[in-house]
Length: 328
Image 1 (cartoon, rainbow, N blue to C red):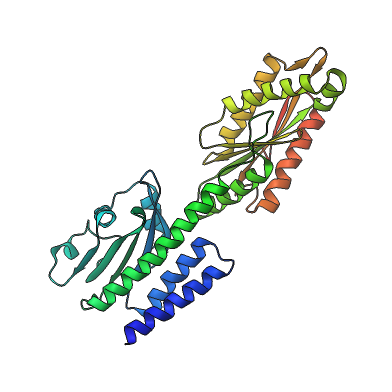
Image 2: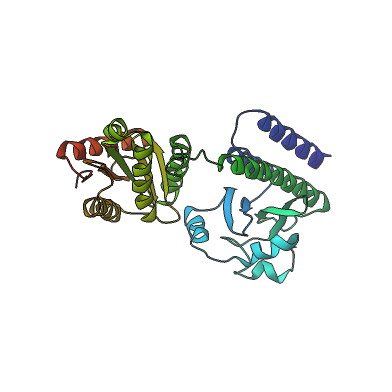
């Protein structure tokens, strides 16, 4: 009866969390904490599986930072590959418990892993391990299956919300994203960079003379020139980069790129504008660009964004097509 009470209590706490404004990651991490507190576990892990089959640690307790880095670096784990297909229950004399390739980070005497499925689709993997060889009773395994279903529900909710949030507002002139969407992605990428220790560069571009072009030749000519300029910028970006436009500003985020490389990209934009000016008549668009790097030039958005904007103003002060790199 104690096992059933524990399960009911944990399920009630989880549903209570779902009713409040917690993120999906916070909810499942809380579940992992509850499991660690109520069962003799070494680790409790929920792995997310995306539609392309890529796996990532969604929530965990008991794993090290180095392990997560290895996983993101592409290391394979046979135990996860097996658990995507069917439930694993390993204990006692099962030789897999002694196989160093059939674990995550540490040895165990009991392991339970199962796919998190919803309507036949595998959205994740639930895994717990323990030094207790007698942990996996029929009642405990049934409880772990119940927790895996809770994790599946939250993972599916996250996927639905992600699809909605990934449908960005698109600027009709340039085809770039809106700044609102850009800001959402920036927050996510900086959080990821903090977690895994890689750089993110910001490249802000002020489109100068756009208002003058619109005033002299009209909005059709101004829009055509802006679209051409934006097309050149987009052509220099990688698939992982993000660009947005708001008014006369173009905002670019470059994940996993160091400042020297970002400065080179900005230089190519300037070279393109110098070599083949964009505009009409004697009114030409100019690019004033500022470049910064997270976390080197600011370890929060509140610090980094003003520094980037200050570099744009410095480029404007210099005149023409110009790039200014923070503390370069």
